[in-house]
Image (cartoon, rainbow, N blue to C red; front, side):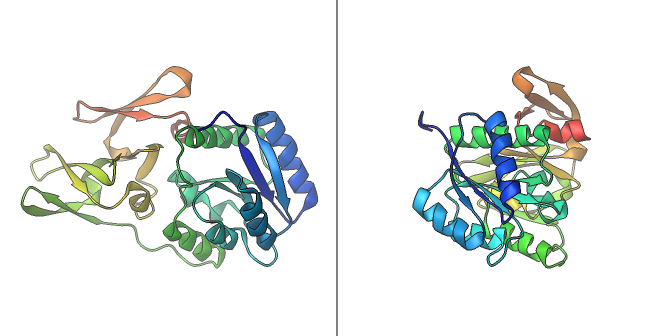
Length: 261
């Protein structure tokens, strides 16, 4: 990321709420420059195309285009944060680390966590982590529809053999360039690994959110496989796994998952 100030757009149909979020961001992220404020989803799309901010704070329910519909048109270049009075609309996305959300009225502590996540993603020059699959899920939640059943099996090539891996046997998943590394237990309970072509960001959305949590931008862990979490420096951590020698990193952005537990 360049040394220039990060830029953001705020979209909300309530002027007072826009102003309140702007004031809170000035405290939580003084270096952030608010380059545009939109009154609805259509205006958010237009202003994004004009200003090209790095972060978009989108109210979920706005007249005309909703925040989710606006996100589809804005695309994956910026980081997205949904702002909502109804946390169930975005809670899946947040818990999986796919994107972030703020619940009205916005709390300073939660905003600080969100800012830390955004800064980390901008430092690593990541594209926005939302996908069509995720936006479809949010749209379904807005319409009161149920999520599809979580993924139960993974297909992976191990040498010349195609293996069917039960998701419940997976200890963790780790992003490995264009692939995802699956670490699981075989029929004898021994540790095994394989690569699959499906990106981690897509797999996250299909896993059981009660069992699998994202602990780093490149790591998702099965809570059943966690032995302990060691607190490190700078609000980071390390996961010790049951029956495995390797340890997994927990970034500052996701350490709050374990604090909440």
